[in-house]
Length: 413
Image (cartoon, rainbow, N blue to C red; front, side, top):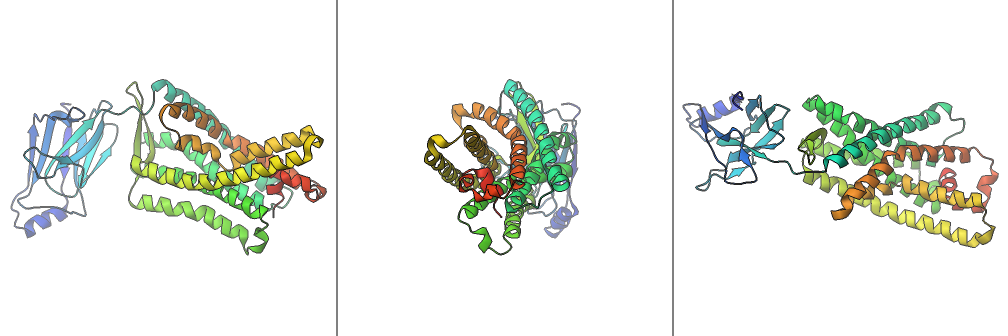
């Protein structure tokens, strides 16, 4: 680390504040040979840097930037800290300081003057190297296929469709658009992260998060529409489709705008057991990620699960009523309806958010495989639904056909 270069930038606001408080000098002090007693972390370059202006400087609107270049972190996680001024032994806290990292640099942005240090912490292993490689391979192929099939479904809808889309199809198309954006932004995320451009990283992280929450919301809209259809409510609601669309796209926007305002989108490192890491653009605070995304999906999952159970019950009750008279094609239609509904309502995402302990690793594989190919399943569902919409009116007149979810949802309007 002998070639490390340190550049300190003090804003004009700090100088004006110092003059106002009778500060008469500016000094930057470097204290080498600093040893940290905590075995869990250590000082970068074994040094502490102090900035003094002869007056107490705090609550700056323009940060004091301490930039370290030619840095070799050796896989460790950097955290800018400042001394809180209490105790015989300095207590190093993160209050008032933000950490900005690139591959070979660290920048501490602090709103006050005191003693500063960078603490390096060995990364905790997020996942084993072999599992990370396998899951990355499966996800790349699956998301690529999903993107292709989602694009094909959207192309068929907007350019080949020869029948008027009903309400169910319009809602399904919104889900396809959200999921297409989600898959595409996920595929390019790592490439954007490697550019190490903060603005580009924040932009792709915002798009990725918004499209994910929008996908969740449209799972909820699908379940809500199915509930309304079974209760025959849509005909009673004025501008029903427009209201569904506004709720589907505006609700996740509120969450994303709030996180964007507090600058929660940044570079995130995923560490593997062999000491390597992969960089992506996402929510930098893991607690915020867990709270927002799990909480948001939990609401969606609770409602969609209830609708799923109620609908499957309708299918099984119909099957029992038909008895032996049900032919193999009807049984296949019922199975297709259940699997289609399972995908349509996004229940597979529960494997990612609600798995812990020994079930965590297997759930990663189940979630990755199912959700990577979700676009393909929805393409088949959309194709099947489109065929049902174009069939003769007698399909709608047979009460027995209402038992299948694909006919019920496709024929609603």
